[in-house]
Length: 91
Image (cartoon, rainbow, N blue to C red; front, top):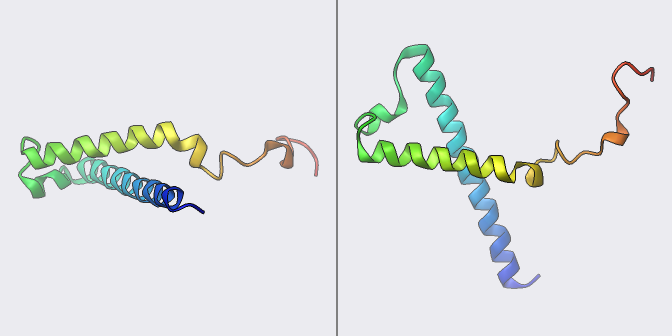
């Protein structure tokens, strides 16, 4: 494999890991906010702090990236439907 292609694959892997991690952090933040009224952004100075806003923007961009790239990267979505029996069909 060419070094450039290998570097591109590694970059895409790290991008996927980073965006997935940020989306998980965002989901946990929403859960904490709903259950306790506390949010992770409070650690960085609250909702109005520049660092908190930057984190929220990165979480949102990560969600958009994963939504756009999901079909291509998801193993569950790429499984052929022809191998599973239709609902209600006898096996």
